Length: 426
Image (cartoon, rainbow, N blue to C red; front, top):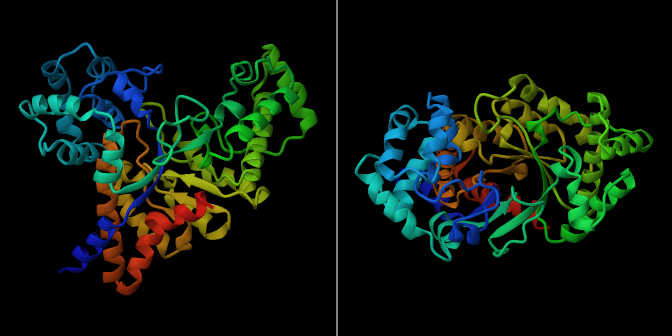
């Protein structure tokens, strides 16, 4: 047996702890409906292409109007195939498409995507969506112990499968994209003052904190991560203005966001919840401000220093600025790095990242898989890429003389599951 085969078999046999998904509930898939149509625009094989391959299709030239039609329930299989096939040929080697290809083969037994196989795929897709199919895919197909889910439908999803779908508290709407309607929804009253809003935040963490796995914030999509320490006497009057509907300047609005973000971080810490932060690359297409992404790592340093007792999970390796995140993990005790999503953004960059990270920063602060998908089937394809990439990276580290072969089993166990268990299930 070759060295690669030996390490690959070890990686294949080791369960992943999946540290990041956006899965909708299985019952929603079975009903063929969710209140947020953006999460579930169609219930056919094209749904497998939506997240994230749709963005590569658009980047390759597919008009947004055609992409929307492709992901709609109106078109039949032949019409959808004709729309997507020219752009599939342009994108089929990207990480996003590789994940789809592995999924088509591993879940549906279709190693190719063409005008004949697409009809078989359409039938198999429907047949696959049966009660229990989440567990079958995650446990039996992917060898995943459990997933951590950041629901895009609610602050905290009261999941029907808590043993395999651990849940984050999503807190952007509490601090950055402030949703005043939440006070009516959860407390039955209008928030008019900062004290009213802090009561809501306290209620959220008191209600869900003991069941949550982490607190997640993706505000890097809308602003810099330079969350400064703002005195309460400044944030209070400005929140009251916001609650009345008054217009605030950029700096005034930022000061309210900064105060509330830090308050949420403190509440998460009180409940022993790691704080997950989106960093780096953006989902979507034609809208990423790369300059702001470059500032993420530097912007976080004051926060990391001011909250030494908080475990920060910096997600997606900060791609394409991943070297800076290795530096943060090496320097700050409270920083961990999550490779979720990154494997399909750039598989080769992730192979290099694993090698460079392990030779620079402590091995106990790296999480090596999270599919970051809305669609459960796609997690399979992503997990295949992650396992193959991990095996390649570890094999090269042994071949190049950096890590002894006898230490690989302990390292594999640590970075694939032990680190996550120690960090999130204390």
